Amino acid sequence: MAPADAAAKTATASNLFNIGAERLVLLGKHHQALMQGYLDGFIDETVFSDVALKKLMGARILWRPDEQQPLALRPLVSELIASMVADENRRQINADVAEKLEQIRNRVQAYRDAQYQGDYSVAELQLQRLTEHVHDLSGQFEEAIDSLWHRLNSDFGFVSSLDDKIRENERAQKQLRRLLDGLDLLDFNELIELAEGNSHLRKLLVSQLQSQLSSHHSSLLEVQKRLLELLAKFRQQQSRSMLINNMAAFLRQHPKYQPADYPNRSELPLLFNQAAPIVPQAAIALDKASERQLLAELVRAIPKATSLPLPDQQSADFAIALQDEAIAARQQALKLDVENFYLRVIDSTSSLSALEYLAEQQLNWDSEIWLYQIIAEHQGLPADEKQMFALLRDEAPASSMNQLLLIRDISLQLQTA
Amino acid sequence: MLQHGALLERLLAGAFICRVSDEDAFRHVSDEQSQHDINHYLRPLNRRLVSNDDKSVYYLAYHELNKTAREHLSNQFSQTVQSLLPLLEWLQLVQETLGRDSAITAGDTIKLQEFVLRTEDNQSLRQRLNQLAADRFFNSQSDALDNQVKLIFRRLKEHGYLLQPHHDRQYYIVTGKIDYLIDVIRFIRDEEHLPVDDTPTQQALL
Image 1 (cartoon, rainbow over the protein chains, first blue to last red):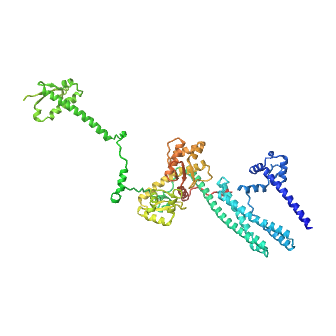
Image 2: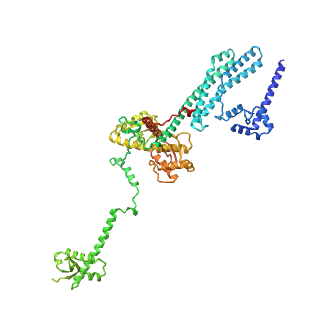
């Protein structure tokens, strides 16, 4: 009986092995088309042959959700891919603990029954299944926590808008609460009871599972804290955006809007108390002998003033000085010419006409200025010298009606004493 | 006080100290003992160290409000009120131009070139920027987009809203002074009971 049973089992196992391996190969063989199907949400049937399609459907990789619908990946396959590539848009979180717990209870019972009956190979098998269930349970939490952290660390970057981020955050928090509720379902007293008197079970259900789950529990609490912080940040950003948009809209609608005179309120809001700037200034001080060396170096370091011609430095003062100089030079020349005229008069014995001299010498002085300067020079002479020159004015009335005498010319002659 | 010398100078000159503008200085002003020391020093200058509610940005306020202080504050307040709309419009423009999902906040980096490139090809953004640049607050005389953007960013830098880490590189970091601006807006909104909403309705959440 027993050998036949074992043979049948081996046959089933090898059959399972063959089918499983074959179907896994199918996944690999069509990996690109299947992955495209994952991204598109449906399968492009034209890239497969009919046989391949049948095989894929038979392997429960593809299915047709509805007669009208195109082929798609089965949810479990999608889930597998999402988990492998950590695609947070599609990754599923399984928070169902009750079912797993039920399976664990059943397996423990089956294991104990087999042991009681002395069927050790069955007991061994049951223990192995039980181990798998326990690992599944722990792995389920691990997967969920990994997914939560992943979403958290990317700031929910897999959705674009802030509203979506807030929704995703809230969804994550709901998942997290379900996971925590699931953890609460685990009653360690019950597990201790289940494991009673068996060191294998004790190790598996109590020491191992307990330590794993308590670490999951603290991870989940940490994630929860961070999720709440992030949600607060998102909300803050959202409210800031709204404030900016709505305030801008309000100000655009009310261009003349003027808020109350807060700076002159007796209770000044701190926000509007912003002191005027003070810029501290400092200059060189000469009172510390010890710093003289340093100061001397600073002075030496000052670039020497170069005597570059600076065309735009012609200030008003400079221009006036220039003018004065030109006038002074002309005046000097006039004075010199007049003095020459006087010397000529001294040399000559007869009377000399000023205008004739001017013409004769081809001096280009204005005749009026010329005459005026000769008179001025005469006036400026010391009294005794003045008498040596006889100054004769050739003058006539301005008109018959006007008695004003105009000087036409001046004759000068040396008077012999 | 010597250790705070540079910090004091900046504060006295009217700077806003935040984590972005100067992390070291920010740590100092956040420390209670340093605050005490700084305030002790500032007392004869009729100044004191204050912060916004979130303590994300520090600046100097008057200790006693005498007549000159009030006059200065009045002036400043009217300037602040005038600058509100251009600043808000700039915030909106940056958010939309750079395609962000939320308003810019302290620490965000803005690349000038990216901003120019995106504005160039979009007629409506281009027009809004044109209007903004001509606003009295920015007061641009130029028609060239590049000059307008540069001027806007330079003015914001002068006002302490932006920080240019490298003088010759055209990218800017938003400083904590933006938090101050938001606080001012929120304050005015609350005080004056303006119909300006900032809480998303349940509809928007669902």
